[in-house]
Amino acid sequence: MKDELILIQGSNFFSFSPNGPQLLEAVRQFDGNRTERELRALPQGEELLGLLEEEQWIVRLEAPLRDLIEGRPWISRQLSFYAHVQRNYPHRVLAELEKRHVLIVGTGGVGSHVAASLAGAGVCRMTLMDPDTIELSNLNRQFFYSREDIGASKAAKAASFLLARHPHLQLQTLHEPLFAHEEQLQRLGGVDLIVFCGDGPTVLRKTAQVGMTPVTSGGYAGSEGIIGPTCWPAKGSVCWGCRNDYRDEPRTMEILGAQVSRENDWNPSGTTVNGLVGNLLAEEALRCLAPTLGGPRLLNAYMSLDMESLALRRIELPPVECPHRTEPSTPQP
Ligand SMILES: [Zn+2]
Image 1: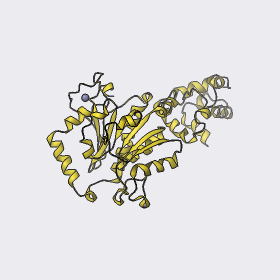
Image 2: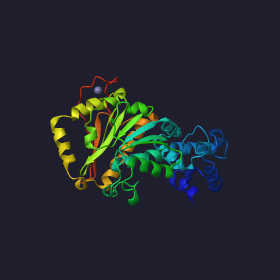
Image 3: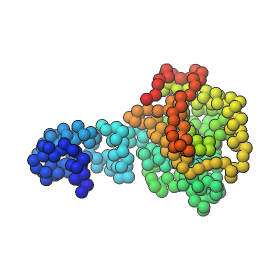
Image 4: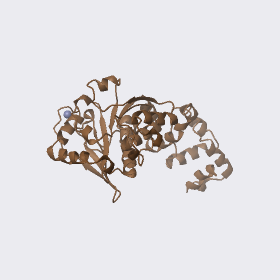
């Protein structure tokens, strides 16, 4: 029945089909392992290719599908997903992701979803950084951890969870906060992207050490999720340091200060808002990591997710003086 699905979906397919079984057999040849020349040589191959092209069902690969997924059969569905975003040569996305090194700051409610999604999406090298240990109050939203992990390092447990699913991953863990040491980023051996999912007090630290490394971030306040902004001065956005200098204004300090002074067990942290923010943030991270996906969408802007109305809004950030950007700011699609 699976093969017949293609025939049923093509409404004008039957109009030129004198030989149903022969066509069905021809469709079976479109299995990702034959060249275009071989397919054109099939009976009715030319017509079939034309129709499938028109319906946008053709995906072009640079190598047979079996070679592209060899040794990593788990990636086949992801490759098929990328084909919807990048119809020609979707495996280039995977090739780009495999070369990148991502630092995930915070492996709690948001960061653990980011890490799981990036690993499943094809990112192979990650450093997981978190100074915290696992608490009982984390378990509503942090699915890497279980009751027997209480008191253990979040970064270490997150890594063992990910490796159990994806043994090919190259993971480093750091049981320390970001910018605990001046030389921290150099010690990691070069990072292509920092995904910041840390708590407010860490955000407020001076962040000159990040330099020109692209940073994207996400979090939430009660029922509002925040995804972005992405700070990437080489792509025309304000840098992370200048963005945070702006955030350090007295009113912002007051709000964040009030948040962090509350009792930990009474801080609102809903399971759904964590997952949604984490996965949307992972999507932005993938666009930063794989140019074939079209680049970041949240330069100088962020997405606000309202859990009450389930509305997602894009909010442009006010211009901030930043002498570090090397490209003029460009409007986002
Ligand atoms: Zn700057």
